[in-house]
Length: 506
Image (cartoon, rainbow, N blue to C red; front, side, top):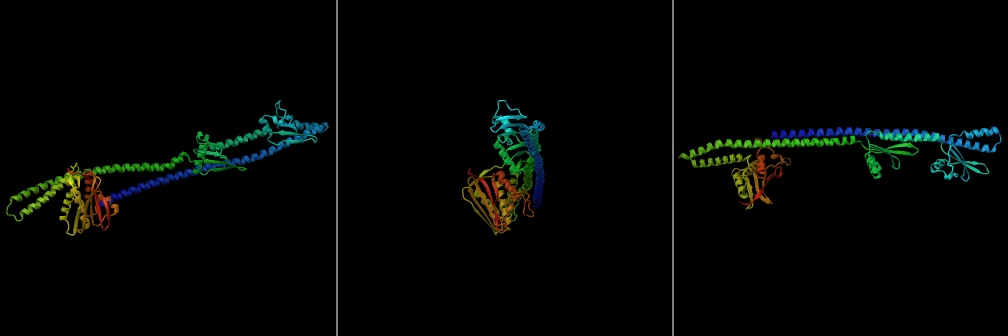
């Protein structure tokens, strides 16, 4: 009992240590994963903040462009007023002054038309010679000169219209700013460490992306799936570019973070597999060692019993030759019974470790023989009954199977402390003979149903815990059967069930 308790306590301690190591690994790795996730989210926020600050610069520059555009329109108005005065004045000095104003416009492209759209003049722009009407200008040129509403020159008797576009300096400055903005956003997205990221506008159009296969981005369906996946993993970061212009940054966990989240479970699986392999290896080694111990002990016991048995047989022969001894024949008969019993025990032990010969035997005769043997050695207060149909056979080795029944019946007697009832009931199912042995003893706790068959487990103060272990070995290894506790209740009794393959009479 102490040995078994120590072994059970050691297993429990090792299991608790393994659980502690596993939980510590999972918790620490999860802590690292959460820390990395926070860092990646912080980086995404930094990208958004950088874009927002750039947006402030864009808004400031846009305001500047608005002022520049207004200044250019003022310049065009000055150009128009000067042109009107050139038509109406006669003073040479004034004409020279206004002519200088008109001719000083070398940057703003302008086209002068009449009220029917016929081109009358052009400044700082080369109009194709075959184009005489403003609406017939090439598409790109017409688009550029239609960006702003024309300025009306009212001569009272007629009206002219001046169409103009941004100056070359203004256009180049605006293009430079747009390129700077787009390059900045793309650079922020593309330099997003190892995190897959997508930048979109309000309509979910992809403006830039990083760490993603371009083939997926070219497929709109795959792109939307990817964005939805990123959205479910992490809330998108919103970048406000001002004046209602928003950009959305969708990002996913990096491959490193994903692997880090999976790592503890992989580690636990490897650790569990290692423990399982180690347990199976040690268990098999322990069983092999137990088998060797069982076989060695059985062979040695049979060998040791041989010497006193031979000596007792000699003394019986000697007693037969003596005459006149009182109760001589009864004494010789009892000695022969005990010698036969010892010989049977020695024969049983000698069969351990070897392949026993199995023969078809009558179930009822076998059961009643063993019950009768135990009944003679039990208290008068113990009642034993047998219920077994006629004509049932199973393949057993008589010497070994008698040992099984004796062990179970003896354990039942011990559990009842010399008073109670033992019922042996035999039944069948397809292919098996079923033997139920029920006692009215003290019972077995449910958590010990498997434990009682372990070597070393015993509830007796002087027990070695080998009886039921040997019984299980004989039933399962030598007879290909099964033995288990069918039911038990503390204070009311226990039922053991044996299943042995059935047979026909030879």
